[in-house]
Length: 152
Image 1 (cartoon, one colour):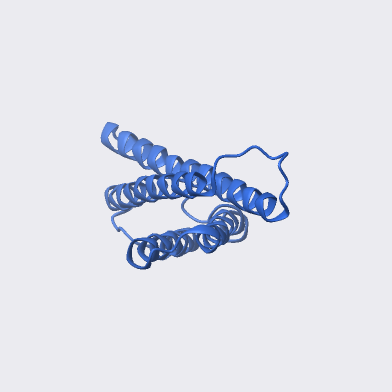
Image 2: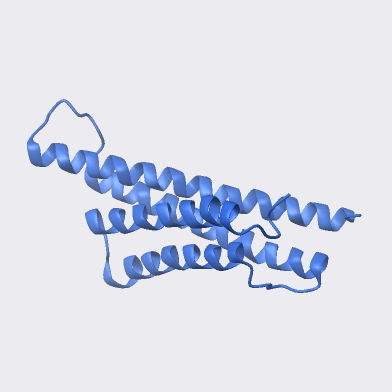
């Protein structure tokens, strides 16, 4: 039987983790819009009415950052919940490992944006690759290929 504390902490873990993923979906949408706008500008297609590339890049970065911090908080709370419920924080199951790898992709991307000024097309392409990796491996691939603690 799960205690009130365990129930609340797992709910918070779920809320923050999924909130982070939702933010990454929005960031991926801005990445797609950035690439679409850049393509239209190169081809001089005036029929596409999107914000300027700088605005799209800034929106992409803000949503990516917000998702990163929400997902980070969700991971930390998940580790605490695992410690309370299972007696161990880290069990090296595939969901945890792939989640950490996906988190690392965005950590590296945000680090390079802060340190080297990585922006524009390269940043949104890396972000899309990271998003697809997180979506495929953490959500779809691991959930069906490697059943673990996150399975019913």
